[in-house]
Amino acid sequence: MLTRTLRTLERDGLLLRTVYPEVPIRVEYELTPLGQTLRGPLKALTDWSVQHIEEVLDARKGYDERVGKRST
Image (cartoon, rainbow, N blue to C red):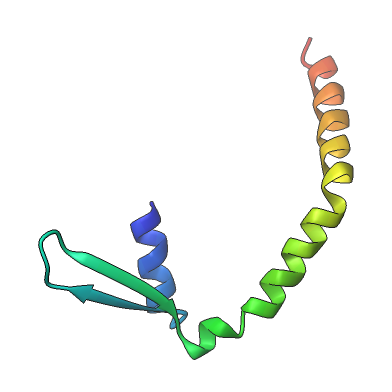
């Protein structure tokens, strides 16, 4: 699954994949200039996630309790 995701990101122009003909084969990935433009939005998403993790966990707990009561 990881390989498929990396290949998709390469196809989309977000990653550059370099294969070195060594034994064992070595592969390196780096962000392209287009991929670099995602750093800001991804940092904002990470910051939001850290800031709101307790609310998310509380929401999950409440949901699981409600759904669990319905199925019994």
